[in-house]
Length: 254
Ligand SMILES: [Zn+2]
Image (cartoon, rainbow, N blue to C red; front, side):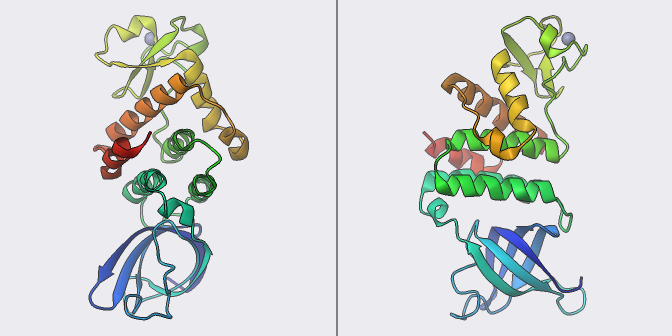
């Protein structure tokens, strides 16, 4: 890997030996990347205080010796997102999003749209003007689509009847089948998940088009609640396990 530079967001850090730190970042240029930051633990000058969770950095990365881990050569702090780390509820949301990226994304696989999505939700979470639960819905809907797990909300997952032709006000969702079921097909499912038709329309809206516009959508509190429940169940099911940070998020949020 030749030397390169990239914006990056820190997902995870771990002390390594007496002096070094191993960090995993989500970078614009190379997707998820694990690096070693030499002497980051002892030195007060080198990377002083900037290799913190969720920090937005500009990195210069070089090759290690032989086939070793890439080495962090330089890092400049672009945005510390310090309002996130100062608030445990905000930290809980950011940790959940970071864990989805950490667990689901391959190393060294560029995903520009996902990078910009992650930077966007962290920026808004840090500013604090948008409801945290609504940001999480936006992130999860787009994350699922970008990672190839988009829930099918436009037609019955079994008979393909379109949403507009499904007459029920409350529509069933089947995790195994990956989406909604019409009234006829829902009798074959043991699912207890449902969404109101209007909520489904809102989810489809936040999943597509301009990110800034999608961020301004207003959810009613029932819509917020059922969307949150559905997405966290859907994510856990398709990830194959409940993210560890989700347990903490569920304990601390309002
Ligand atoms: Zn059907």
